[in-house]
Image (cartoon, rainbow, N blue to C red; front, side):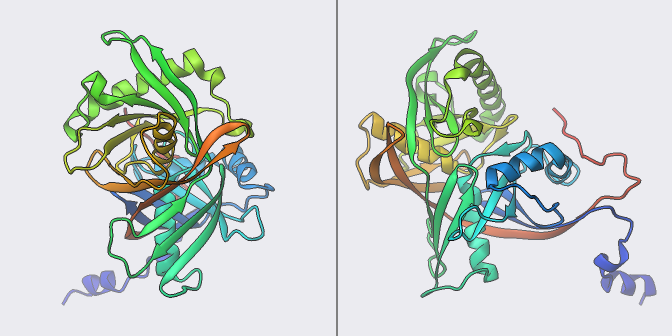
Length: 354
């Protein structure tokens, strides 16, 4: 037996890899196929008084951490992550900051679903009858999530989103090569432009990914140029921006109600049906009187994974008609990682191609 081979099998990387400036520990997960890298250690202590303030501090002073963990060679263009921080409110369990290829999100439903599964698996909070409830402070507000650990359902984890509403309805934009494209702007923790893919004749399949991304990027850019100043959150300036474009179709392969394909950040495509996007969709469908209170809606993704959504109640939010959305799905752990930065590495912040 080779002595070298024996040493390889017994190697403790954490004690041998000492040429490093940073050491990050993460657990990787997926929710309906959409990745989530949960950063558990290695991030600088943030001093902001709120999750939004800590997010601003992270982006202003430590953005190289986001790039290192999201970009190649440790990540990829469609990687998504989160960083856990101190909560804002005394009754919340923790706060969370969402990161991706372009920067920072205000809400992420697939991340909420995944972190709820992780909290239950790792025993972060005591279970009651094999159930766990979390209160999570996000940049857009408090999110309450629940998991039934005995359930094997696709919808074993549920979260209650922030008040969701329609900001602009039945808007139109002209793009070269297309008839006028009608879109709506709705908020479900982030602002999305919703476009009827069936009306466009756009096939929401993985084989059509390139066209979906190109059109999503173009629409986002042109909508921001045309109506960006109108996309304002009624309470918080830092939430006032268009995060992505969601193409929706009622032509589903698995007898679901809709397909949602979200192009967000810098051309990322969500592999899940998009949790905050489903929240906005529920508000939009209620606005158009196409869904009832507590009526369940199954939405699938570009890879046919599923979320279930419903409206628990209606409310007034800063003078706007809003709904309280519920979204359910499931998530799974895929790996555990230690990431290092060698001081001699010229690619200290990673890179993206395309």
